[in-house]
Structures are given as C-alpha cells and as structure tokens.
Length: 75
Image (cartoon, rainbow, N blue to C red; front, side, top):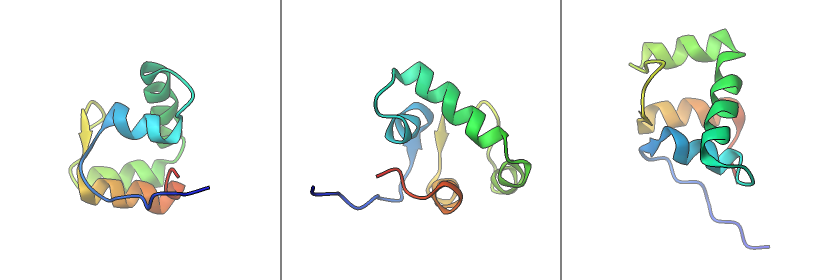
C-alpha cells in the first residue's frame, strides 16, 4: 500500500479530524478529535501556550506539529 507522508501545514479542525477518523462524518470526527485532545491536560496546555483556543476553526502548523507529536501522524 502506498502511503503519502503527512504534511505539517495549516489544517481546518474538521479537516484534520477527518484524517484521524476517515470513516465517519466530519461532525462526528470533529467531536471525537476534540475528546481526544481534551483527555490530555498537558496537550491542551501545550496548545494554549502556542495560541490555540477551544473554539478555533483551524490549527496552525506549529499546533499541528504538537498534535502529531502527541498522537502520531494520521496516516
């Protein structure tokens, strides 16, 4: 199977969530991804330190790097 390398860039919240949960609807993927993030207070704190807000509609490349460092790349 040919896997593309994950690219660190700006992602919409739902867009990144769907990469982690590709077999469910975007709204459900977003809810699941939000739950994943909020189960780890240290992760939330790291994200807040680099200007993430709970209601953010996108992740900056710096925030994506933190998320991927915590969860591993989605592919």
